[in-house]
Image (cartoon, rainbow, N blue to C red):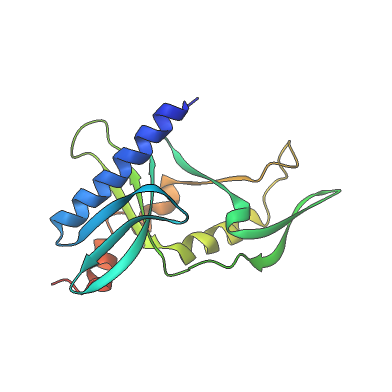
Length: 162
């Protein structure tokens, strides 16, 4: 079980790895010192700025509360997705980081927030009800993120690089 300190270090390492990698690619980026909802970095290149959400792991999956993405109701028979997607910025850039054991072994997954919402909508609707009916836990695994692995072309497009 991860401790609060371990989770904070993972978050900090992830944000700084993304900041450094963006810098290598010609994008200025800075992490926020405090907690800004939905935004971890602000990036700029070629007079184009964009907020970025960063999530880092040193495990098998990224963990979420599904209510961040979907309208979910608890019924007598279980949880039910109400068919509504939460209002959120679907174009928000997301960079998920799988922190490697050694320097240079980190893996980056780059995509838009709307893709993640669609993923949860598709996969959460028919899921087996949890033992704790009031649990809204959901996760996405590395195997489901392969299409976004190393997708730096999205960053190049957004910031008009090259």
